[in-house]
Amino acid sequence: MCGQASLRSPLRTSLLLAGLGLAPLLAPAPGASQEAPSWLRRVDAGVRLEVESAVDTGTARFQKAEATLLPEVRLDFAGGHALEAIARVRLDAFDRLEPGRVAGGEVAPWSRRRSLGAHGEVELRELFLDLDLGRARLTLGKQQVVWGESDGLKLLDLVNPQEFREFILPPFDQSRIPLWTANLEVPLGPGTLQLLFIPDPSVHDIPPADGVFAFRSPQLLPPPVPGRVPILGDERIPDRAFEDADAGVRWRGQLLGSDFSAGYLYQHDDRPVFALDPTSPPGIARFDVVYERTHIVGATGSSAIGDWTLRGEMLWRSDRVLSTRDPGVRDRLHRTGELEAVVGLDWFGLRDTLLSVQLFQSLLLDDAPGLLRDAYETRFTLYAERRLWNDRLTLELQWIHDLLEGDGLLRPRASYEVRDGLDAWVGLDAFYGSESGLFGQYRANDRVVIGFELGI
Image (cartoon, rainbow, N blue to C red; front, side, top):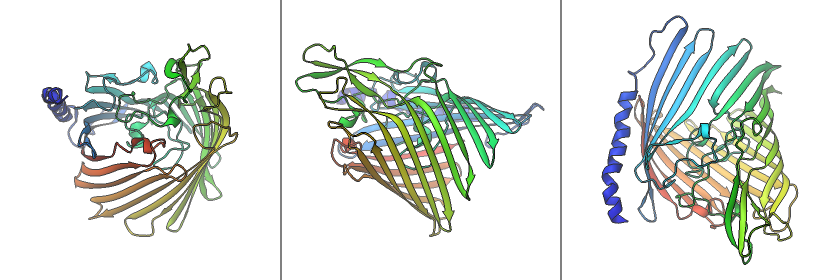
């Protein structure tokens, strides 16, 4: 392996240099806004370059050495219409997050990332037309739709599936999988009514079994069947644009002096579950990968009182499908409703400082013996941020802890604005707890992260 690594080092170097070299070629001059014909009011374009390396603290082995280019352009037309496009080019010197793989079948063919050899990929992140229809606004194309306000962990942010190549470590806007969507917003009373139609059946992009952040927790794998070897069978991934489409409606606005929203989403649950095939041959437990339909009703609210902001989210899910070890359940799947809620409290009482705590709670409405998760789940998060030196230095600490499982994630980070458009950072991602937990499964994956971002 050492010999192979040394042979590949020139390729790694060239890939990273290519990423650095493309930035000035793709970027317009600083402040790129230029004269346009009368029907085109404004053109804005730019490129962001992010270079980040992650080193395993236990083995001193690189998890990644990645250069990411994000070229984007926005055209503002007469009449209030606009067209926006964002692409992403990623080059990784080590190819350990998704070895030999760019995107699996979980993502619809027209939404997938495309390979640039063994160490690179290109993706159309967003491409949408924003149409001004008088009092209404229609956004058509590939986009992200954000519901919910929780930090660190998601509750109502369920419209777009997620890419898990680095578990939940990347920012949400980078890990969401944008979907081809028709998004209509219409004023209604003291707020806005949003209607969604999503003919893009993409679901969560799960890392491969040999990836650094491959799923290892029993909660995310097929249940054990005594005396039988588990294998994966058919993947019943939604693949029909209209028959498998998602749809949603949400109202948001002011209610009793507070920000409030309420919505309904009809979708395939983006999380895969494993159905035991009763025709499996002797000694084999063949599990089909399936995605179940579910109805979701949720609401959010937030209110500011002096230096404090109180936030909350809750949802009801009609069909939460979970794996069970119970031999009396033929397909080893238990179906139940689920209630989830989060309460958050933010404090801004100290200058240039933010303290935020959140409590997440999940309750299964129909518990059963043999489930691979508890009927109750309770997680706590803490976020602290302090800005120094006229906001040039930012110190952050994020802590996520599962109160029942006893595992969690600790993330200190320092970032510094070197100059306008250039930020550098260093941080630590430290997992702890039992290997059976969602966070403890990665307790051998602690890493130091260092990187910079350049905007052009």
